[in-house]
Length: 144
Length: 144
Length: 144
Length: 144
Image (tube, rainbow over the protein chains, first blue to last red):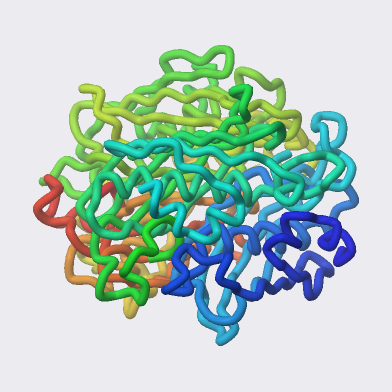
């Protein structure tokens, strides 16, 4: 799992780290740097930064329970507090793993534990191969 | 508006370009490079890439109608087709601009016109200053 | 299709009418009565009333393209204007019909054409039978 | 609060009961009857039934923290298990109460504790009066 993230260029570009992924849960981390901000002076991460972490960690969580690739079908993110500080941390949990789709909850926090955002998404758990052009390994993130 | 995107480090990191923004509408573009992919061999962009484009262009659209900063409150994205090809293009339209929140629709397409994803979000249109630490310019993207 | 709605007690309770359903599209109507309001003096329909119409019409639209039952996986609704007047009208369109899930867009309007709400949902298109207790006919609305 | 629900015709039509509402939390209950089903033989509640309970209880929760009416801006519901049994129970919690909008999480369960659905919504916390035609009491549910 960690290996796969290392082969995911976009995760590498942002600096997303996968700390753990097992039994429907995954934990990730993303150090915040100036290039991830919306505004250098405020230090606030762009809204797509916590989203990228949430989508990636959610995909990792659902992948632990399914042998196939598990593309994102849809995701909603709610922004609760500014994404600031040294790093963001995210925990994802599969709350339903059905034969065709899974539902995953994610909480994104600052290093000091403040909840920055919550996300909830639907991921495919079957049927990806044969109907998509990227059945070999896209896995985490992306459309079916 | 275009100037502001040039001062937004994360938009620069990804390569997001704002082509137009006026009267509640905005159009943006994002050339796809290998570093934006989930898997180099498939060429598929990571799911957070169309999201980043959608959130940024939506924020630009709502900013055209409001003098204050307009942080994202929440956004949902639905993935319809693989995000592949030379570039992604996004059009955002404010479908309701209320005194406190706006609703914005976004369509993300490939260069050949295939719809990659649709997104819909709620953005603040007032009250950002005084309750947040980043009232000066965060503007597009990010939490309130 | 219309027959099925007539056998759906909740649609009957509210008064939902299915005007047309074919080739991934469906149109429905719901006369507004006092018992559907949040507040009798305002005449405003409860937020769950446009939702019920949207979910039902969306389910009908996706059912036109799939032989199996098509339960709702998730749905988001955005409220744009007050749901008032003599009746609500909804149009649903399947924007992607995949082998396992479909994405459906819905617009809910007043009789005078004002957009009351937009909704977007993910519906199952396979796999419902065998993993659920209601494979025979639940069809429109409800979870997988 | 309980009084207000008693004056809400749609809540009465469905049979929604508000058990408690205080300090950003609310608990509600909805006995399931045949008229709330999608299919009488399955006993499965229509998808809009848990939504109606969730929206109503969420509105009650956010109302405990704000003096103004608090219309729903948007809500997403995810269906996890069949809505069956004698009754549905819902718990709502305001996870962020900002000066203009609040974010509310809801869990809907069967009487035996199985999670039927989760919902997350954005509600207005200011600005409703003066820009809407129903400032007097619509309160729970409905658009701004």
